[in-house]
Image 1 (cartoon, rainbow, N blue to C red):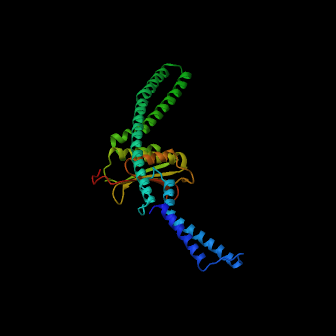
Image 2: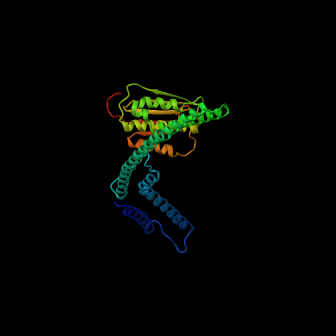
Image 3: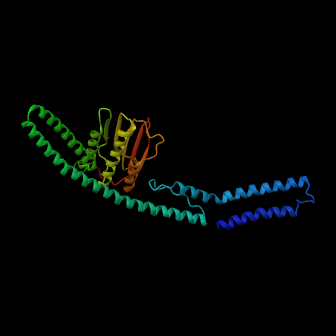
Length: 317
């Protein structure tokens, strides 16, 4: 039965009951007596209460669907309103669920293209930094050294300082190039890349340790890149925003199969701050490989980022 006929018949039952009561035991005099007025007002209140209750029951599936539409988030897929019955609301709920499936698939496809293009652009920029600017600064260093060896002492001191500044700039450019393109990930694998990342981010004020369980299931290159980028973003957030003094990276097998990444710090936590572009980017990457990303408070304070990858097979690295 459609929603229109359900509401119509429910209201008709309430009105028919009131008419039967008026024709039967309930009578009205002229002028209306006080007791009869009380009966009429009580009957009106009862009809309104019954009508409100029946409407609430009849429209409850529509309210649930509206709430699901309001809270739908394509970055957190899988949540679907339950389909109950065979009426118009059930058909509308099924249509909404199908629309969410289509939107999530299209978003995953478009995000994959965007992230692939982004990684390609990162690789190109890193290559240019290394080949063009890096070689130019190396040539400048050699020229400064040659000039410093031949000039008088007062000028030599200034040239030595210029050498140190140029050398520091060269090291910074190389560091940026490594962050843009994790060459160690391509050459030595995920384990070495995570340890290198921990050593690079760690400072005297921020201790970073990497704990990697041996014999992990094999991950394809796309999954390894997602794990590396999520760990990189988690460490960057911990170093810049959390005020932490200690960060741990754990890469270990999941109890039900697959691989789990955990980045945990002892900082001030997220608090009420909204999710920024960094966390949104991590969610986008997790969706590409069917992984589940969690960002929240750690068991002892601070912030922890967890990435659970599904089981990709029994092959061990």
